[in-house]
Length: 384
Image (tube, rainbow, N blue to C red):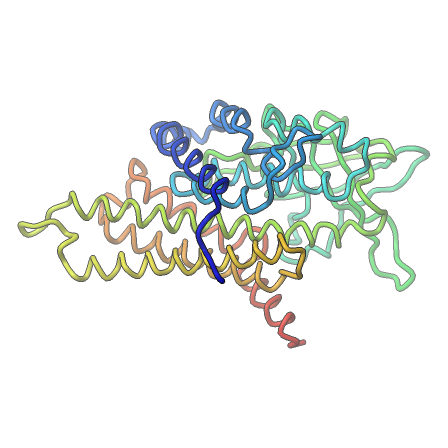
């Protein structure tokens, strides 16, 4: 029997996060967005609710839930604002998850409790200024000098990397050459404040203006040899597996934005009058909103399917890419239609759909562009 209804615990979580987003986030986030200011108080509240610890075991301060629980929370947050949602998404799936998946017992005990509590954040240092989608073209290097790694290079577009509560950034670096001459890429934990680790001024961004994003540089940055995360030479493979999971999370966030567009348009169509009646009575508006709802619904089913295979321990790379592709398209299309329905008001930042429009485009780029998702889907189908 197929049943798409949420279980009791999932539904309770969804309602709790929905209420938080509507009562705590919605009234204030526009001002943070306008000021391009990180919402520390909201992040602290999310930490106190246990959202940053959702998929982690209780022994590390987590909530003992699973990755689908995180996705549900992300969808509900993104129905109101994507900056807050991506702070949670990156903090969990990109900041803490690599340490949980690949860290030693000592690394987990040192870093995970604060990351799960939301009192500290971690960054995911993969992308480089000249790399983009070609993550294998890593130029950052790390060489062993006695009992220390000496890191040199730079990273770009790194979320949660420069806040006052950022505790670490996990970076990929070339640590040698394989027998076939290709790069040996490893993953190393770099604590914030380490000499030689510099966080550049925050980016001026089109969207996600209340989230934290920086370029990072490493100049003879020294960290202990035991900061190696996982197996030497397996860093690239580790990060690819993290990205597979992260794409399901970004899909959930995208669905939230797409659904938020529907929410705002339904409300607005019942209030706005034109030519003597509410615009929601016009078939052209009804059909546009119906298409928006269909996109959000379809995209939700796609990420549910990917999450289901992930939780069963089955291969889910193709499903994750499908979910990311479909949901990011839905978010972009719904944001465009919502802005059209709102007319001139849709171009004003004081209305949520203005933020939604600015926030939607990055969803087709971050954690693997739409083109990369199509390439991965094709490969999974056996096309080489």
